[in-house]
Amino acid sequence: MKGKFIAVVVAAIFSVALAGSAMAEEINAYMGTSPDNNAKIAKFIKDKTGITVNQTFQSFGEIEARMKAEAPNFNADMVIGCGSSTGFLAKKSGWAVPYVSPAWKGVPDVFLDPQGNWYNIANFSFVLVGNKDRLAKAGYKMPESWKELTDPKWKGEILMPSPLSSGTANMMRFSFLALYGDAEG
Image (cartoon, rainbow, N blue to C red):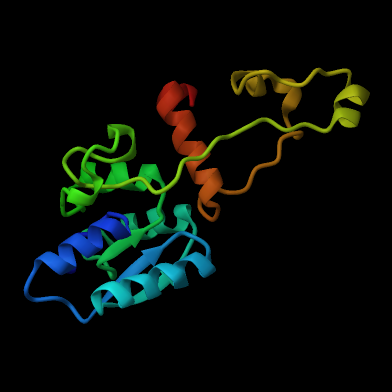
């Protein structure tokens, strides 16, 4: 199935695998959950379907960069645990093979794409965290919004990993662009 991803979570795999008469013996997957969870997911898939998952563990940002670089000739059949931005990108770019899983019937739309291009397995919340002593020394109060961080006084005071290597930073990048647009985000 090289050329398109099945960008869905494990629940959909089982429905697809069990519904068809001809099943693959193994698939290649980019997996962005922790290595321990990846191993559990791969074992669960093997136990339920007999399909071996050859996994490549990467962060969300690395998976997204890899997909962009490989498109449309992907080296994996599936992505598991990639972050919303990658699911949206796969749908928009035509990289996903839609599948509407009966196991997800009745789940609110915020957790899945109605056309079956992606399924959500987790949600993230981002919070501002500050060092009270450092803030007091500088005479600053704790920011109350993300937009406050654009004030030049914060230059050199904000730490964040690269979205290319950190799944959390990649989701923050995507969230800011979604909330504020390309220029302001």
